[in-house]
Structures are given as structure tokens and as C-alpha cells.
Image (cartoon, rainbow, N blue to C red; front, side):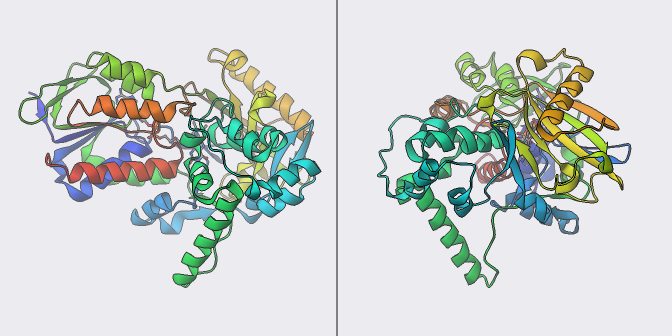
Amino acid sequence: MVETVQTVVVGAGIWGLACGRQLLKQIPRDSLLILDCQERAGGKLNTISSAGFRFETAANGFLDSNPATLNLCRELGLASSLVRASGTASRNRFVYLRGKLHKLPSNLWGALTTRLLSWNARWRIATERFRSPAIPSYDESISEFGRRRLGPELTDTLLNAFVTGIWGGDAEKLSLRSCFPKWHEWESRYGSLTGGIVARRKERITAARLRGEQPPGPPQMWSLSGGLNELMAAMSRECVDRLRLNAAVAEIRFHGHRVPKWDVVLDNGRIIQAENVVMANPPDKQAAIVNRLDDELSAEITQIPSNSISVVVLGFETQRLPEGLDGFGYLAPYRDGRPVLGVQWCSEIFPGLRAPQGKSIWRALVRGGGQFESGVGESFLIQSVMSELRLVLGIKAEPVFNSVIHWPRAIPQYVVGHAERVRRISTITARWPGLFLGGSGYQGVAINDCVEQAQLLAQKIACSPHH
Ligand SMILES: Cc1cc2nc3c(=O)[nH]c(=O)nc-3n(C[C@H](O)[C@H](O)[C@H](O)COP(=O)(O)OP(=O)(O)OC[C@H]3O[C@@H](n4cnc5c(N)ncnc54)[C@H](O)[C@@H]3O)c2cc1C
């Protein structure tokens, strides 16, 4: 017998669950199904507990610069579990440059005074506000934007490291407008990046005063005491009767008459009929699902690349680590070509919550491709990270715990031309009533972006005539 619902969401990662949960607030419960091919909901976000350590498989936390995830946690009754990164983690972030670890400036003033940059580079920052904008009409790469506004030195060091920390990718290839739309907006609106930063800060202070709150500091990272899986588990519980696990979607077929009708075909041949299909799985999986429906759409989605990352988790005896490693961790600019893109000192970020007494846990994010592509033994990967840690931090201790998670397609890369591609994809998708493409492949990869975009789409669907 063919099962019929009004809306099917494909994928129960943060995007699919946030969308499904929002829909359930507005539509009858039995009109929704959320399908996931795995035996667990949550997608990339998961927290693993082993040998007294607790670590994340993908994101380590989310920022409060956008309140979407904080609000979601509070709505789910998780307010008492919310934890903010420690003060030292917020203050002390490092970058590995020219064979040495340097403390990163935490604000504009810090960038103007840091010894990490030459006088010339600091002068470029100080005078950026007075450089008239000649905003190119084409889609600029982040590096091109950086060189135009801030000069080559800052672009190749701090900006490159910053982009590495968020996108794990190449600033020469990534699009400014798609990866940092605010920066593009600030330049258009305020005439400069630093002008935008200052204006935005003033706006936030005024808004806080009006609410009778303290002026906000720089954005902070947050998580939950039990890790991000607490969030995923709470959302799964809310959707439990509408969630179907081990349900891999192989194909979707359209039967449009007066109202759209979709056949969502599972890989075991079972069919679920729906009026709306929301794809909240990664772009490559979406491309495969729509391949027989619309090869033009599939070809466009296939063009959205993703990087490949291995997360190498290492536990140490704290007393065997060098003194003074207090803080968030360090980044290595992508352009330097080092295998390790960054190391997060997780037990320093969330003290007392990620490692047993007397132990520390770190995560190294290792770039994929070449030597680290799948097939490489885990022990080789761990040894490579250890050699890097010996070189960068002078670590002598051997790890007492390790775990490796490979993400062959980790983070979608919004390369130059991404916005134009997304527009073409939207135009093609509009030919298919009731089909909606979501997930982190289009309008933001951060957890906050996923939650915000998913909730917006859910509201749009709930208000559509087919609900
Ligand atoms: C190493 C790493 C570090 C990160 N660090 C941060 C960070 O610190 N802060 C931050 O904000 N973000 C971070 N991110 C980004 C963030 O974690 C992701 O962008 C986000 O989790 C993606 O969620 P999603 O729901 O779009 O996709 P996913 O989590 O990939 O979920 C997609 C779901 O679709 C399912 N699926 C796939 N194909 C099918 C099919 N055919 N049928 C049914 N189901 C299917 C999958 O099983 C999966 O559950 C990081 C990402 C990585 C990889």
C-alpha cells in the first residue's frame, strides 16, 4: 500500500530536523514525514563519549552572533544545559605563521596594534575606511576582496586563517558574496569593511541599551554540557513519531495534475506520496535523487563542491602537555598547504565537560585530498597529526586516547559563481511545484544558518496553499 502525507523532508540533520520541527508547530502531525538513510537522526552533528572523553564529530559549537540556535535550544527546554566557551578560549586564539605560533587579535583595535603584521599592513587597516569602494560587478573571491581592501599581507595571513577556520577551504576560490554576504553588504552600505564593523557594533550597543541589557561583547561560542547531540536528541524526540530512520530516498517522481503529487521512492522500492518534498540532504545526494527527474537540475547541483576533512581526536595526560596552552587552539592558513588546518583544545574551550580529571582532549582538522584521502590508515593519519603537533607546539607526550572521523564531503564550498548557480537552481526548481531544496549546500553552512534557513522554509511551506 502506498503511504500518503502532505510533506516529506529528506534528511534528518540539523537542517531537516529544524525544518520538520517548525512545520509540526503549524501543520497536523500526520501530514509530515522526515526520512533519513542512517539509523540515527542528527546527520554530521553527533557527540561521542568514550573512555571518559566526550567529543564532537563535526561542529564544536555555534556562535551567538545569530540567536537562531540559542533560541532553538531554549525552546527545546535545554536552557540549563547551555554552556559558553571559557573566557580564555574566547581571548586566546592562535595562528601558525612563519614557523611560529602567534596570538590572534580579537578585534579591530587588536589588529591595528598586533606585531604579527608589519607597519604597512596595519596602516592599510587604519586607512581602509578612507579607500573609496570600487566594488566590482563580478563575483569576487575572498582573497581578491581582501587584497583590494586590506592589502596582500593581511589577506595572506589573518584573513586566510580566518577563512580556513570557518570554511576549511581556499580563499582564492571561495566567493565573498556567498561566504561573507555581510562584508559585501557593509562595503556597499558603509563604503568600507571597517566602517561596517564599527556601524554594526554601534547598532548592537544601541539595541542592547533599548532592551535594558549590557552592551554585547564579541561573539562567543556555545554548546550544551552533554555536547551538540543533546540538541539533536531533543529535536528527534519532538519529531519521533514523524521520523523514519534507515529510509534512504533513491529517487523522486512527479505526477502533476491539478495539485502536485510526488512519489518519493526509497531504495527498497517502497513509495511515499506527498505534495511537498523538501530536500535537506547534502548537494551530491540531492543531485543523485533528481537525476532522472531533471538532468539539468542535477548537473547544476553537482557543480557545488565540498571539501574533505578528517577529524583526528586525541586525548592526553594534561601534566605531560607543555604549559601555557590555554585557549581555543590554533589555525594554519589554508594557503600554507599544511595537512592540519587547525587544532581545537576542546577541554580548554568547555572545561570540565569534555575530558576526565587530569586529561585533555584536542581535535585536529586535517585537510583531505592527496595523502589523506580515504584508504589512508588511521594510524598514519594520527602519526601525521602528532608530527605536526611536535613541530608547532613542541608536544612530547603520546596520546592516551584517539579516534578518527572521516568526512569525504565535509563542508560545501561556495566557490566564485555560487550565487549565480543558486539562482539558476531556483529557476529550474520553480518548474517543479512542491519541490524545495535546502540543506547546507545553498545559503550558509554554520549551524545558525541551517536553523534559520530551515525555519524560514518551513514557515513558507506551512502558509502555502497545499497545507
Ligand atoms: C568537521 C566539521 C566542523 C564543523 N564545525 C562547525 C562549527 O564549529 N560551527 C558551525 O556552526 N558549523 C560547523 N560545521 C558545519 C555544520 O556542522 C554543518 O554545516 C551542518 O551540520 C550541516 O547540517 P545539514 O543538516 O545540512 O547536513 P547533514 O548533517 O549532512 O545532514 C544530512 C542528512 O541527510 C541524510 N541523507 C543523505 N542522503 C539521504 C538520502 N538519500 N535519503 C535520506 N536521507 C539522506 C544523512 O544521513 C544526514 O543525516 C562543521 C562541519 C564539519 C564537517
